Length: 243
Image (cartoon, rainbow, N blue to C red; front, top):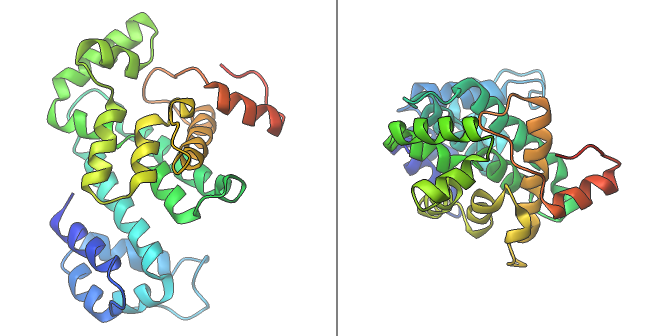
């Protein structure tokens, strides 16, 4: 993760941090500053008065929303730097759709909406990290996955000894994203495997959002079968035709 983003995230976690102090850090990254200002001046937040400073945007949006913007910007940058054959546009669209879906499903699953957005956005962080550090390995995994019609996580477990989600959980912990986000990154593809009552609701929320996102966006890898817990939730919602 970029140094400015890491520093800003640490400040967002500090109690009583002043918007002006955060502005000083964020202003050293013009791209990140522009994204925060753009959101602050969007119809969702603007009250007819233009927000001209990053500090003003931070004050309007709040630290938790600013944190989500920082994660999104860092993740988008990471995806853009991928050098393998993975479809970067499809991966970003799928991640964003999962994030939005997770936020929408948060209340019904009893989880925090902003945490759900972050968990949904970053649920593929393990795949992105692996693609950045070992693009040739990911290319081989993708080819085998498509040729054999098997999920990428299944092929990866056989070939390299771990799933991208396992790496994602490690990255989430290193980024201090919290236990629930790390669990969602590890088990989003099958929430049934998450037996921890502290994290299972978030994992299920992201799993359902991931399933819906796979229906409305181009899935960047071979789709995974819907887990039993997600099937039950979809049945309750009146969905059919689960794969």
